[in-house]
Image 1 (cartoon, helix red, strand yellow):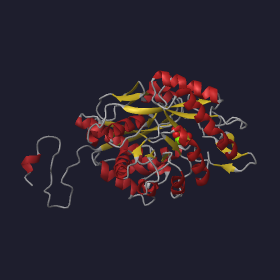
Image 2 (cartoon, protein in one colour):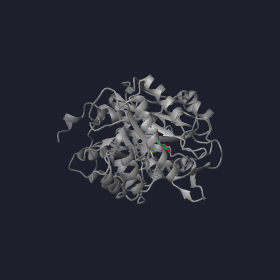
Image 3 (spheres, helix red, strand yellow):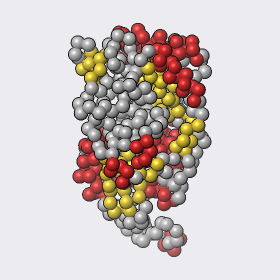
Image 4 (cartoon, protein in one colour):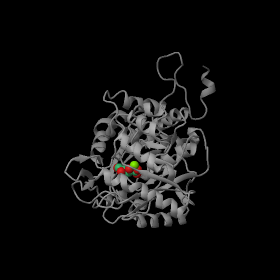
Length: 432
Ligand code: KDG
Ligand code: MG
């Protein structure tokens, strides 16, 4: 290779290609990795990678209810290995943290890797002076369809909430409602109607009751009333939160067929992926799953057997942008579309990463959207996302386009917090 061809511009070839060393000199050394755990409304683990060129990148490594484990993993086990490495080697660093750790997969490991991976993509975009979606291959669309959440204590309450969202311009809405006869569950939590799963300020997990029989009797009525009131145009989603067995989910899918859902989410747990085969054999209601998946392996059989229609992995929980791009491409082969998790326990950095992926992926389906209403959140994170008429718009900024105010974050101290736990009325622990 002729050296002189490569000495101009960013890429400086210092070694001849015939040697065993990398032909690319360390372009941009990682000088520090800072890990912030803050609570601007809810807990977030934020990663900041600094380089010797003064450019930094940001990543989200939040695991709801297990934040300090990821922070310790990053601080003690990742940071020392990456100082001095070339920030441009995203693929090699990803493999180093995944294969090189010997201990693969799992939510803590993969969130830690995700925080690093997102920050490295952010750096690469800033160096190139391009938004990350350009590095992925450019835009497939100029706006990102989202679904909002309508929750309520009663059917009427839930549908009033949905009516308000329709008026705001949303084209797709998720309906969740408190189940009659079950106290304090599944529609609202502590009076929070816009999001029923907000972290509790209690230092121990709150408990909620569950009854599958009551639930299965009730949910089809909710969707029947929704169609009576709104007609067939609005797209509807429901999240089962993995509380059914496959045959129960199949029954629910069948019962919901007349109401034409966009998808039924997390109808059963997916450790046993074949559970979805059974549901699939019985219903044409589209199926979505994946928000707690950590790797492509969690989705492999679901996708290649076409047992699902939407894969809902989140960049923060599946190892970052690098694997999410791979999962989207793999899913496209089997007619599966992406519908990334979009709960507020993902920081605006993850939401921005999704917006870049959603702009790029041809097989993007829909993005879950709760919004960024909290004042404290907006004080700490400046993000490039805006909402217009049921679509998210992504402003063109280099990298991911998010900024993080470290000083403001310090004001909002981490608070130990948990998701609720579910039990049957006889005390048996159930899936939450
Ligand atoms: O941390 C768990 C929440 O993000 C989850 O309960 C939200 O199911 C969820 C959803 O679909 O947004
Ligand atoms: Mg869900």
